[in-house]
Image 1 (cartoon, rainbow, N blue to C red):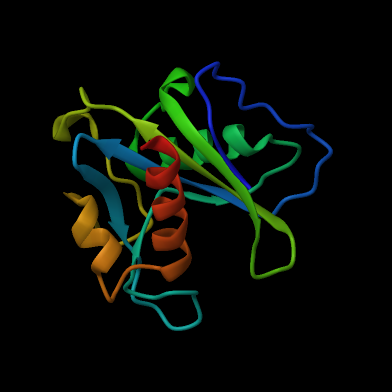
Image 2 (cartoon, rainbow, N blue to C red):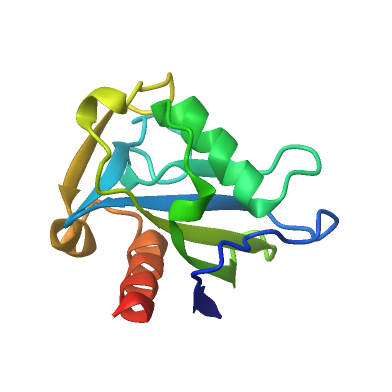
Amino acid sequence: MGEAKTDHQWSFPVQEPFDGAKIAILRRNDVLVIRRDDKPGIPWPDYLDFPGGGREGSETPFETVAREAKEEVGLTVPEERVVFHCQMIGPNDLPVHFFALMWDGLTDDMIRFGDEGQSWAFMPIEAFLQANDAIPSLQQRLRLALAALE
């Protein structure tokens, strides 16, 4: 299900169908979160989310999450910092990918918030895991990543 990697091989076959990808960007004991828009008709309005989203074209899972992180928070995520990946079945019965990345040198001024969501913040990992307004599947996936990294 999940795997901790140190060889930075995050490529998957391009033809593999998948729905999307999310990434937990960890900075010491904090995680980067985005407060979703509070609009009717979108999944999880006003909830805490991670950068990521749907696949475009023939992107690999990592290409998807890297593009989304650039669009949503202005970061070029370094693939060599990825420490965890898992694939699970998502709400559309297609695989979804989850990555965790360790980036202790990431500073607030490196963030360039995009036009999706209400705000961004670094929050303590434990606070995210216990938040009533965090997307439950992301809490579950982050717990998997943390367990694999212990």
